[in-house]
Length: 364
Image (cartoon, rainbow, N blue to C red; front, side, top):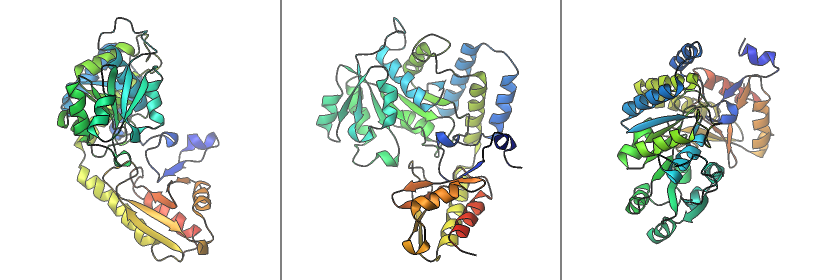
């Protein structure tokens, strides 16, 4: 029986056709990560030394100068901003609330920027023109915080232009790319490629590592500042603890991700999208099309399903019916469309999603 331990607690397991969402558990662990976490769980280790060794290995694998494992990408924002506020060797880790500010493109403001503001930093917004950027990025700016992905790109200036202006003023640039895997090259494109000081990536999304893990990759200064404020010390990140299981699990997941045939993986995603478009196309009152890219701007398609009044369904009632299924089926809603994402499905689950939708829509 599927997910027996969940069922013992009265929970139905979920087929995730939505995305690598925290509320659904992120993603499935890569098989090597499961093994690595089990091995880590059975032994004691010098945690600061393990964190350094894993960070160094992750940097080596990705071509970055330094690496640090956090308890998720949101914790990565807090620690990396704290690092930029105080530098890599703060006179005291009890430096917050901070007076320094963070510069952000106004179109990037979102709930995650609270992970910077909780330090007491203000946010200076800038527009797409150089004059606006130059005004916002000044002597009191600790860093620029940039959110990557097609869903943040509308009206935004080029990141390369932002990095250039920031570097002229000696201000580091942090790129939040939490959900930007695939492509796995996001682990180095923003830093080694474009010159940002650090990239922040979720460990539990596209990399399929532990959900409670994240990566800060980039300059030694940013990474050492993260380390200064984090557990097992008693800085602002003391509660953002990373266990030995997450450290080895994430390393194994990154190694596994780098060894994948990414074009073949993306091709499999497209097969699922095609199956949905063909399997739902032609049903009375139903419109379905391939959307591209994914909701986070990843380079793969998704199926966008719209239901008309003649079907007897609305978007909301159909989403609820899928969720009431056993196992539950989770989907995203984009405007008036149900978005089906193949990234988080195991082989064959796309067929189960298609069957559930066809059954609800009256197809035989």
